[in-house]
Picture (cartoon, rainbow, N blue to C red):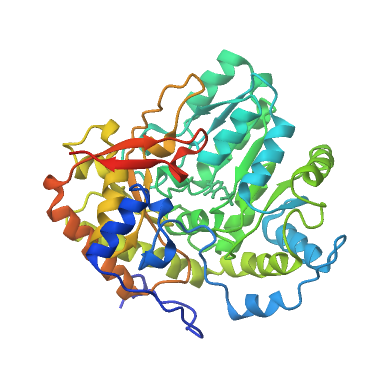
Length: 460
Ligand SMILES: *Cc1c(COP(=O)(O)O)cnc(C)c1O
């Protein structure tokens, strides 16, 4: 038997379970109406399988839970801080670390330091909070991801790659001095959890070195990216996830991290840099926004859990089971004929709402609509990644993103294969009655990151 054809399975077993409330369809209809057809506004107790996000929803290991008890809650110089710092230095290779309460806090501090008013920030597809902090700091984000990333049916193995010609155009137009840094994400979230190749990153490093431009790494899902490099890229099949992650980080100058994703904890993040000057400034700013530089908004116990979570996330068997579960769900959905973003990404399945509900215009919020319908069908909570998430430009006009997706994000180490079956069957049931589904109208819109709190009404 070829080893590659054998099943993946979890390298862990359950020690404790959390009981879930089962609901009826009338209860779910009432709940989604009260939530203004926004799955972010549902109460979690009304949700059966929660695929809203993979952020902070991870199951911690028994070792991590044990470590909570030895957290050092000293205000300054906590032992737990030094454990976190050393886990980051050893596994990722960055020199200087600033802990933060989560990823966006690291983005806030870093953007304030590196972006001047009028600067350009090129990146491989935007992320909501990342771009907002870049804009609030006076920068303008420019998308330099390859065109294939915007095509949900294109099977390019590295849809997170940077198009160097797009970058070159920006450098020619504005001059390298106007480029604050390259905002480089691994396993690009909004492209559907799609990886960047090591070859592309090496080319980008060579180009940016020549023009003296920094690469700042959004390393929120770096381990999942490394898994795909190991599976798909020549010369990397024999390297461990740990080695590949280290190499990725070595090709960048600094990072922001939401530890709530890959690093297997429920809260936390950090900023990292290899430059002393940047670190000095960050150490000044973190006390304004987060807390002292040796805790940055985290409890000592959180830092203990992060230090262990980083190490656990780099285990090859963990990543195989993690991405294997996502692939299992995706293949099942494809078998039902449901249009999903291809290739299947690392942290979830992204259903192409435009392809599924072609009778709705983008202003009728196809992805928002679909997420609400899936909840009504089964109590599975998903989320919109389309026009609502994209928000408005600084001139007040809506962004019209090419992708209109519903994200089925899989929390790490939380659900079973039987849960995956229930999810796929629910998506299939909605798919079967797709032609009868009506769109939505927005009746309340918050100023920032509107997808979190916007409210909608069903169109008649
Ligand atoms: C979640 C996320 C962030 C922001 O991190 P938070 O911990 O939610 O503040 C930044 N970038 C990417 C790619 C993310 O997925």
